[in-house]
Length: 261
Image (cartoon, rainbow, N blue to C red; front, side, top):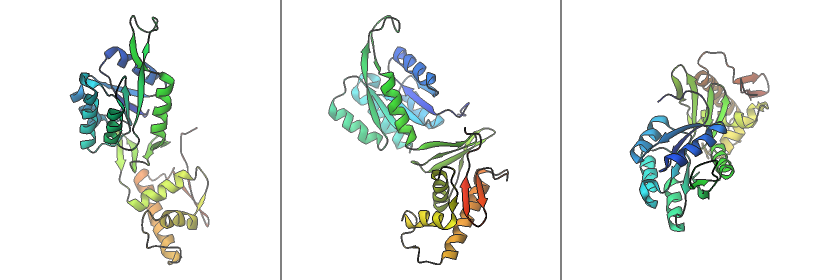
């Protein structure tokens, strides 16, 4: 499935079409793209086909507290790791705890409340508080996905980078060292990062090779960073324009986000 734009995409699954419609309007009003699924089978299919940025899931799907948990379990079995936020009315503590364990890191839940506003619906419905829902959604998304420009985005939590192509978003396959270098440049927030500072950040953090240290040959480190930057440029910007990573000769590198702000 090709996404029509670059707005964060949320897959919404709720057993009540009316509640689902109300939530969808809230999501779209706050700038999100919303996909909907009517049942468990469609929910799993949409999750795999669309790869949404976040999964908003009714815990009582199918009329049972365990219904939504089964859907989440099937989605996780596919290797999909997007954050999950459960919607629940009266789930017991043990169900919530079990559900959060199934969903894993980045998961959360929002309780539904009775809404008796006649202007909203001709009868009462249990819906999540819109403000609370938006706060929790934005908190979950900010932990991973970040737009790096109009045509590039990074998910730090899932360690993935994607660039825009003619037929939608496609993965950028970075080696571990390349990902760490790109991440360090992005987190510098537009500030030039010196070459020495860059390989100190990447190698001495211990995430790549704990046996390497600043006492090793500095020239070897410098060359490895240079090669990594060269490979990153080629992979994220195959046109050869090099609009993202800029070299400041004798100093280091700076990451720019074209089209942002």
